[in-house]
Every structure is written in structure tokens, then in C-alpha cells.
Length: 263
Image (cartoon, rainbow, N blue to C red; front, side, top):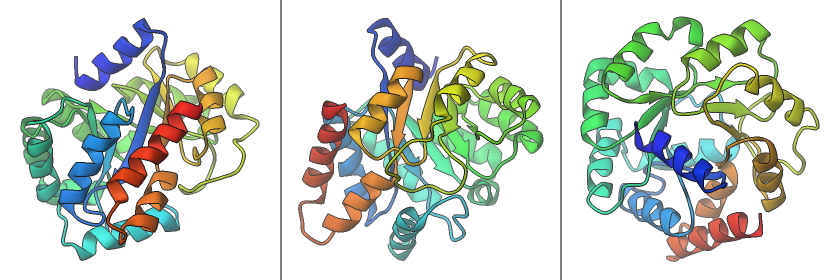
């Protein structure tokens, strides 16, 4: 079992749900990213999504796009992020999921990435823009290296695609709470409960919900039906607002405690 699988099993045994924050690695620099990951764990994170900056982040809204621009301006590469994983593993065993677009993985080389990511202590990979229909080589390579392959499933997915995505995902299934790009929202979709219940019919692995989860009440609502809640843009915005003030790590940790504690 990967750390991701073990964490979900541990939470299930304890009757708890997962809190999964996302950060863009290298925003504003890798040293801060590593400090943020360790602080997020102390603040109550169960699994952390580590975003790989990419020049064409088509699935992301303006907050994460700006984070990507800051990370690219600090010259962050996929190789650097894997090295960061090695350093994190000297201090922490928190489950880490790489979240990337497919192009950086192809450029790095799938076989080499699978080997290096495993060696660096990462547990899984989500290739945001890789369709499940074209994923067989990717899934085979990652699975052989012991990495979970997490896929996005949207409310607009057909029953056939839901079934295929559910069968291909390992570690957990990432349910998109709405159509469109990442970003904060005031209210969750009224159809989310029915969507999650549909997903339950197709998989026995944990389901985590992301896109637009930005308030404690959102997390609480997600936890009523799913196994985990992913918070991205709200946390990245917190980083953006405090990045020049010298207390960004402390501010993000406090925000995380508020999100999870109030839920």
C-alpha cells in the first residue's frame, strides 16, 4: 500500500475524513514550498497535492495561474520538485501526490519520472489533462513503480466514462465538484450529493472532492458524502496575499487550522 492508501485506511478506521490541501511547488520558491508542506501537516493536512508549474494551465483559474507564473519565475522545474520530495522525506512521511499537466511528464520521460518520483518519496500522480482513454501507457508505467494514478471525474462525465475512470484510478478518485476551472465559490453545486452517490456505485476506493472548496461549511458538506476534501485556490490565494510579508507559512497554517477546525 502507498502512503495515500494507508492514510485513507487509517482515517476510515478512525471514522474520520481527509483534508487535502494543494500548493503550487515553487510559489514563491522551493524553500517556502517545503516549509509550507511541513506546516500544513502540522496544521492538520492528511495528504498534500504538490502542483507542478506549467506554462499553459488550462484547467486552472486565475489564482493558481498566477501561482504558476510565480513558480516559473523562480525557475522551478519538475526535477527540482522531486529533489524537494527527497528533502521532505527526511522530516515527514505525509502522503504526497504530484499534480501535473501531462507535457512536463512526457518531457521528463515517463519511465524516468516513475523511478525518480518513487525514489524521492512521492506516492501518486494526477495528470490533469490526460484522458483516461489514452492513459494505458502512463498507468502501466506508474503502477509498475508503485505510484497511485489518480484521475479527475466530472459531473458531466457519461456513465461509461465514470465507470472507466473509476476502474483506472488508484489511491482515490478525484471528483470535480462542478464544471469549469479551479477557483473559489460561495456555494457547492446542489447536484453534488447525487453525483457522489453515482460514483459510489462504480468504485470502492475513496472519493475526494475538489474545485471550489474554499470554506469550512464546504468541507463539512463534502465530508458528509465523500472521503476527502481538496482545497486549492483558497490556500493559494492565502499564499499570494502574504508572500511579501514574511509570515506566509504561519498565515497559511492558521488558515488551514480555521478551515479544518471550523468544519
